[in-house]
Amino acid sequence: MPSQPTLTFFGAAGEVTGSCTLLETEHARILVDFGLFQGSPAQELRNVDAPPIDFRRLDAVVCTHAHIDHCGRLGMLPRLGFDRVILCTEPTAELLPMVLKSSANLQKVRLTEHRDGTGPEAVVVDPPPDPAIAAAMERFEDPPVLYGAGDAERTARMVVGIPYGAWRDVASGVRMRLHDAGHVIGSASVEFEVKHGPSRTRIVFSGDVGPTGDGYLAERGRCPDADVVIMESTTGARPDDAPSSDIASELRRVVEDCRHGSRTAVMPTFSVGRGQLIVHHLARLAHEGVLEGVPVYLDSPMAIRASELCRRHPSLLSEAARGMSGAGRSPFEFDGLHCLWSRKHSMRVAGRTGAGIVLAGSGFCDAGPVLHHLEQRLGDDRGLVVFTGYVLPGSLAEALAEGRARRVRINGTEIDVRARVRRLHGLSGHADPGQMVDWIAGGGRAPSMVMLNHGDPVAREGMRARVQRAGVSCVDTPAPLTPIAVG
Ligand SMILES: [Zn+2]
View 1 (tube, rainbow, N blue to C red):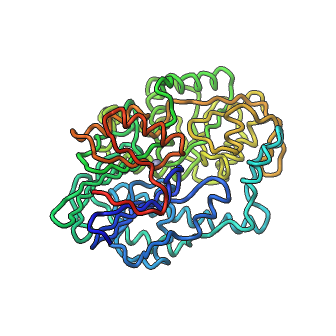
View 2 (cartoon, rainbow, N blue to C red):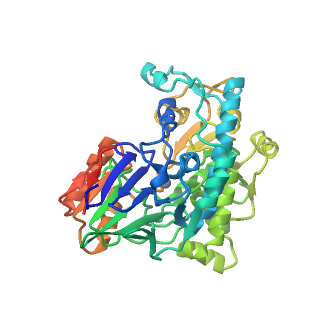
View 3 (cartoon, protein in one colour):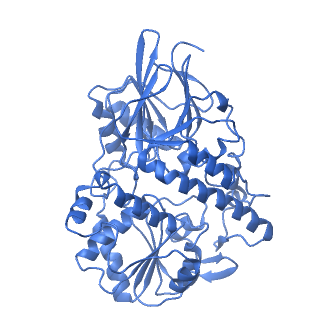
C-alpha cells in the first residue's frame, strides 16, 4: 500500500446507481456508501456479488443519505463480516433502519410472488417494446434476496448518527465531518482529513447535492475547501439553457385541471425527497385556499414517515417551511391531506370519483400502490397521470411519460390508455450543472482534482467540460475497480 491515500470505485462510476467507494491509506480503510445497482434485472443481479473488499478489515462505513442507490446494500454488511460503525447524520440514522427493513421485506415478498406468479406486472403492449430493451428487461429466474429482516436489524444497530459539522476520528490518521447537501432530509457531503507521512489531504465526497431555490430544505452550504472532490454528475447532460420551471405554478395548474375536470390525478411519487417536496408545495397552496374541494391522498407509508422526520428537524428546513411552522401551520400537513396506511384504504381511494390528487409509490411505477391507481385511471379519458421526475428507460413509466404507450397491461388487465399524461420539470432533487459548478467553487480555492461519479458517460463528459471551464484543470472520470492515488 503506497503512503498516498487511494480511492477505488466499486459502483456509480460511469453509471447512476450502485454507489460504493473505498478510501484507503496505509493504516485506514473506510467505505463511503454501499448502494444498490438499479434498473434492469441484469443490473439488479450485480448486487448479489459483493465487491472484492475485505469487509472485516474496514474501520468504518459512511453513508451519505438514505436513498437506496447509496444505502441499499448496507444490509449485506453483517454477512460480509463487518461489525464496526456506520456513520451518517442524525436524520439519516433515523431513516436507515426503516429503509433497510422495508427493503428486506420487499426482497422477500418479491421472491415469493415471483415463484407464485403473483408479482406486480406493468408492461406496455402497444407499441411493442424494442426487442433489445425487452431482452434487457427479461425477468429473472429468481429475483435476488440480498439480506433478511434479521440482517437489517443487525445493520441498524451499527448505525451511529453524528451532528452536522462535528469532527470525528474514524480511523488511524483519518477524521471526518458531514455537511448538509440539501438533497433530502439528512443528506450529507463528507469531508475527510487524511494524514499520510508529513502531509494532510482533504478529500470531499459530494454525495447527491440538492438544488438551490424554493424548496422545503434549508439552503445548503457549498463544497468545503478540499484537495480532491468526488462529485456527482447526475445532471451533467442537462443543457445550460434548459428552461427553469416554477413548481408552484405547475402544481397550481394540476389542481385547477383536477377541479374543473372533476378528475383524480395520479402522481407516481418517490418516498424520500420528492414526496416531501410535493406535499410541502401542496401545503402552501392549501393555505392559500387553492386546494379547496381537491383532496390529496398520500399513499406511501415511507413518504409519510419521511415527512414526520422533517417535522422533527425544523432547523434543517427552509425559511418558508419554518415560517409556516412559526405561524402555526404545518409545512407538511393541511386540511384535505389524507395519509393512507392500509391497502384497504388505498383500494377505496383508487375507486373514488371526483376531483383529487393521489401521490403513490413507487415513483418507478414497477410495484406498489401506484399500480392499482393506474389500473383504475389510465383507461378513463377523464384520468390524469402526472410524472414528476426520473423515469427508468424501457419502463412503463417512461412510455407513459413520453406519450408513447397506447395499450398497457397492469397486473393482468389490459388497458387502452385514454388518460392524459403530463410531466412536471421543476421538481428535481439534484442541483443543475451550473449549481454544481457554484457548489464546487464554494471552498474559496479550486480543488487540485475532481473525480466525477454518479452519471452516465454523456453526463460525466458534460459535467467535466463545465468544471474545467470553472478553472479545475484535472477532472477525472474514474473507471471502476482501479485504485487511484490521490493527495
Ligand atoms: Zn439521492
